[in-house]
Length: 140
Image 1 (cartoon, rainbow, N blue to C red):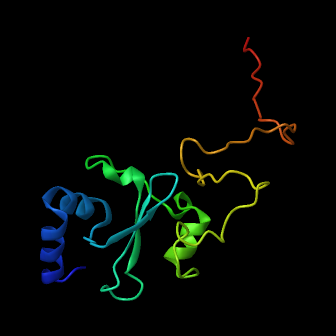
Image 2: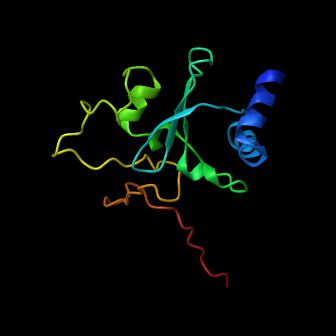
């Protein structure tokens, strides 16, 4: 929940289109400086005037459409940006290059559990029980 002056400040800084998009997607308005962008197109912002815990946030790449209700979750954020968002790192990963994945590490992908693209295994074992099918004798 935002205060009235903060909401008006957000409207003036963002403009009506971006203001309504933020209200629709995250239910709040946030204004800050762009810190960086990851390889998936997610944008990371910071505003040190906000209260602690509300001063770093992400704008997901899929969030740009106004009418679609895309699903966002934490697995869409790479590990190095997750560390910056949750204050495990002071400098963002585009400034501090110490947190680099090793060459042998797998490429980062989001967790697709619960989505239509989720992995579904198939069963290769025989069933322990067979379904009962009643056998009916013909009547004379």
